Image 1 (cartoon, rainbow, N blue to C red):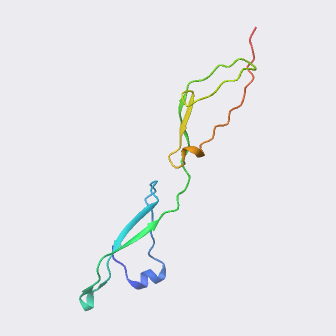
Image 2: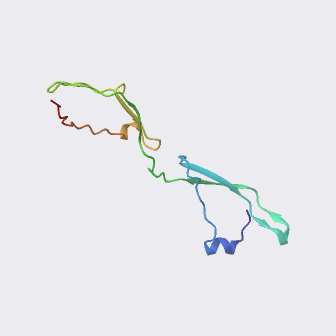
Image 3: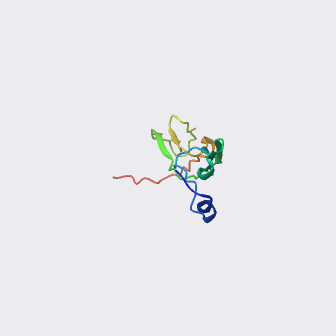
Length: 105
């Protein structure tokens, strides 16, 4: 890609991330003065990407669990587990509620 200093000053040049989950990127740039037959040494520009938490958590294990009323049961990752590609595992929270089930005669 080629651009001039006026393109840069006008804001026509911008960096676009590829949408991956990486938080760092880089590109190499070389300044070229064709009329003077001069070229700079390559320089690497490092970019820190602000991550966006846009992935939906996915349930990977849900075996179900039967518990008698009034009993206490420990729910482990053998019973229920999920992953979220752009969140730390400690940030994945489960909200568990009871649902009344009607008994048929």
